[in-house]
Length: 81
Image (cartoon, rainbow, N blue to C red):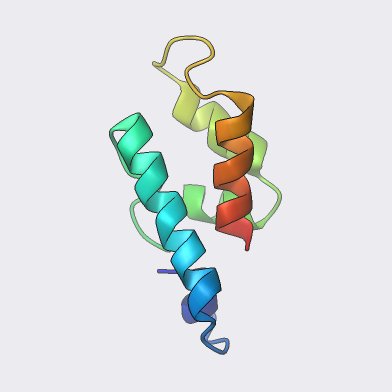
């Protein structure tokens, strides 16, 4: 669920679509979703300047450099739209 919908803000289709696309891209690349649902702690990290925690968590048990800088930047920006 996109943050706009969760916080009962006006629907902005392009923003919600970018958020959803970020989830899809993350899933396709990593093989698992970025977070379980809107109550997941990892979900809150993205919107609250916790990107470092988000990526540190997801980098566990992955080869060093698995998530490249440009990929992490793209996904983080898509989640923050």
